[in-house]
Length: 158
Image 1 (cartoon, rainbow, N blue to C red):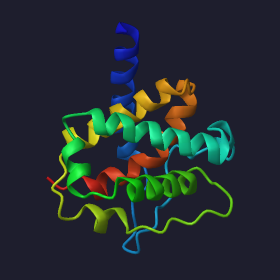
Image 2: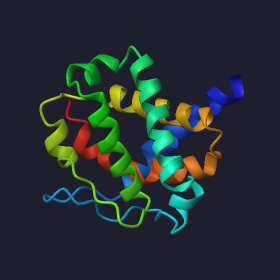
Image 3: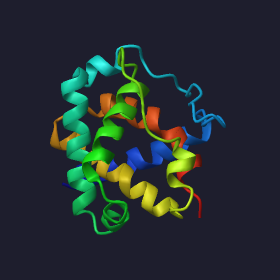
């Protein structure tokens, strides 16, 4: 468990450093390219639609068990809708063919929530726990975290 905690801490630091160089959301809610770029086979490495859907479901399991942030998600309700939109978002971020994200931009969806960096990082920790839960290789998990890192600027507002 100690080694996993170090891995988790390293991943969180990696996310913070990646997000410094990552692309950001445009006013239209589109995401610009990230640095480092996401590999073209990231979606397949994550197991395609089945793997991504399972990962998002696992992520929400950990989020709803996490007392640091679960109340935020519960307050906004419609957890099934949140899961569906996150499945779309993650699939699009990793280059899934034929998938369209149908939710609001990250800026619009989180504007009034007052999310802190600590709360954002709690979701990142839960993301790594979901990877561990599904035995997703660390380097593959980092592809996903790198793809989502640019949203930090749009989500963290206080």
